[in-house]
Length: 245
Image (cartoon, rainbow, N blue to C red; front, side, top):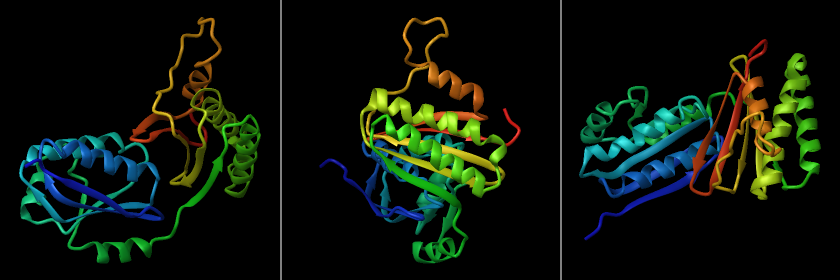
């Protein structure tokens, strides 16, 4: 009989809780990675992974989970707390490269209460339609937020990058998008999530087509940027640090 793994999101924001039950093996390992990546793409303050009803038949399957942790260490850089793990799961995670920084908690109720007591980050979220007007809307959001956070010195750069990210969705993805602007630790992170799984392409400067040049600009103006693929689309993100790059 084939193994079954159920990954059920209990909540998304500000703290995400993902309950995982069933059997983890080489057949279901990828499903765990997909579910964790999707929860992280929402950019919660913290992700609590309830594994109290999870059985591990093959510890190697945790390799997928470890690769997700490594992939998302730079973005969205959300702390992951594994709740309710027995000795077998704790030992399996400890042996996976990239999982050394994963926090463990006895149960999710305690971890959730602690996480909810932490101050909420400064954040702006907006849902935008894939129309040219969205570019003007996102520029206004960035200008207002940078002024409120006293980072007006690089508001123009942030607004230009945000416009390029949104314009790519308008031109290529043609789906509703969610724009997120985060401020904390002396840096600003912007992300645009859309419903297309088509990955963005950065073209050579001499290429005759106009598409792709915006991403080259994003690369030049950002301290870091990248793409987080999820099952229902992708998140293109960029990080800015005052005075950089």
